[in-house]
Length: 101
Image (cartoon, rainbow, N blue to C red; front, side, top):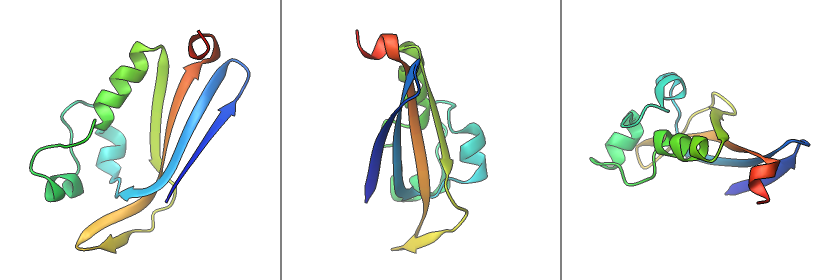
């Protein structure tokens, strides 16, 4: 299940994605925006990355004068087929003037 919301705070738009996805370790929360950084769960599922990656999302967002933030919403871990998952939140922030051009 994924929950997507948009929040208009006046000068910017925040697009929030809340979902259960691969567990975000403290190391990934701290260093995940560095291109090429992969968490243990991602490495376990795929030898090579198959997604955009947090670092690339961050770069693309910054190129559009935005920001990208993410976090675990709880410290509770869920296990499925030998992989760890957590409830996570991913937010994209864009200046309203850029968003509506």
